[in-house]
Image (cartoon, rainbow, N blue to C red; front, side, top):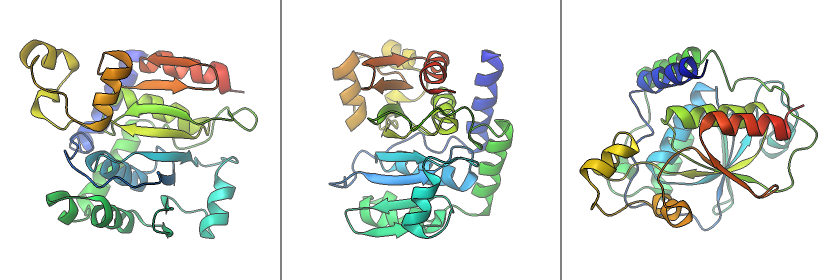
Length: 253
């Protein structure tokens, strides 16, 4: 089952042309963290998350899967309707719907160079995003098994959008309606392309680039995603299967 799970997640990334892998070396970091109300299986939300990775931006993710009751009402109070994605930027006081508008806004306000001027995803991107959702069997689309009001402190996930194993962990967080800080670890240099052993074998002396990649090296001595930190229980762990099991045992109904 784990092999099939990993395979379909890899195919989902392939359907999107592995967008959400590479990160900008430079970006304008907001003083206050962005907030994104979304759900993992939503194709339009996927396009926004890809942009967050590519601009090297972190965000507080408020999962709003279909049938969810934890964050959907809050999103409606903020924006007036239950429509996703919904971006809240407390740095500028802006609240935006529509993936194309959110992406253009993020690039204009936080991008640098080519990343600032890149165009919005077109119809082909939306086809790929829908295909990615279907390939995952619509995981991360509906609420499933959430228990109570959730933890008091935000969880933290080191991830990047196209990572097949990170997606599996994000789907579980979404289905359980667990809010978390998304720490994007997009790949800023060619040495990081491919699995971690490629860097270790062929590029051992290449300096680590990227805010969160440097932070993870300092924290753990490794660069591997997904990496979950739960301050509520003092838990920190790698491996998507272990993370999913932990989340469902700790916060599932």
